[in-house]
Length: 464
Image (cartoon, rainbow, N blue to C red; front, side, top):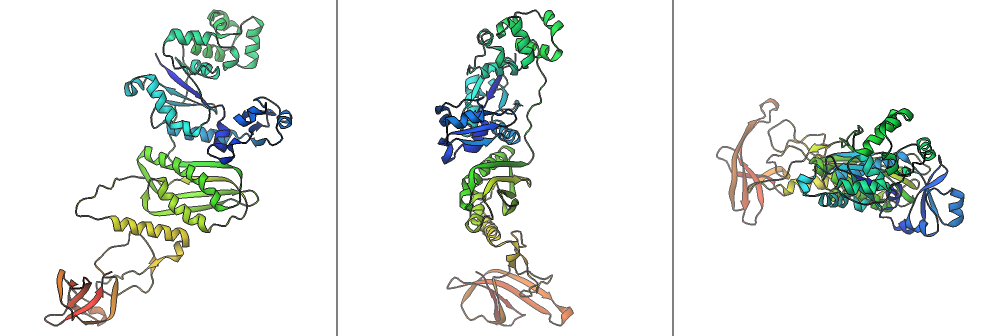
């Protein structure tokens, strides 16, 4: 028999706004204008006597400094999907139910974790830092577990007898039956699920539609409704709304840290990395502004991206107060571990790539240039038009500095590389025929030298 875990988050919109905020201890409520009532409150608001379902006028009368935020179903759904991404690290069969709940199939996880409690602990470990309140329960169907979770049973019983006893005591108010159907059952004296389960199915079929019958069968464990399993997104896109308008760019950092940490989890689960992210700031009285951050190396960790973001925040001037931040990452590539070997040192490559990324973030792409070689084998023949700096520039054995006029090598030195013969240039009357070497002097300097036939040795370049 299937066994489902139902996780209900009664304060999900509050968690989206307040979790990790210094202002989270202030009385705060989420207001639903369509219903003209408070739908979510925090503990501080509850101490003032405010409760869910209360009108806005009454709530404001009970607490003069109540912080009120408008309910946003789309934002809450996006946050719920981000929680599903976290759970997907430790569980596979996940359902996103409505706008405030997740359902996870537990019976398949017993082979991995051993029992339901260990699986539950692994799931809660992933989401507990991001939600302040969880109502949960286990049952033989999603519908059964949902009723028990909304009734605050907080039980993980897999025994059918214990589940049946807990379910029978629940009121019809915790079911998914609409108000009209519940009123119809009340008129015939049916107020609990135990009384509902005692009614003959044949009699129910004469008075109620197929939707109601399918739901009752799911509660009885004699049928199951078809639900679409959760599938992780191929690209990353998350946004967060701030509690108070941000006027200084540095105050955006905690919210960006949260988004970058979620991005790190997103990439780690998929064993991918990225070299480009986009941060969008929404302002109170100004158009939204987007900034793309590019990395010369493939990044997977939040700290690596944060170092680039910090460079930008140091000089960023906000045109207006920030109300919302969004992080998008659409350029994904498979992450290859740096195995390396005893003969390859990649430290300098990644250091150069990180330096280019930081300079590009601070000054922009158009400010960075590097000299480039022409399609000519002769050393010292550089391009007249430099090109934008790139981390994947072709590496060769060119020295860092070329002497304008070669001079005679006078210091005692030892050849460590060569010869490298270059014989070309016949088309421009500046032909050369030289054997190039790299030498090390007694002072530890590395020079590029050459000789023509049996002539003297000349210094041509120096390596940094």
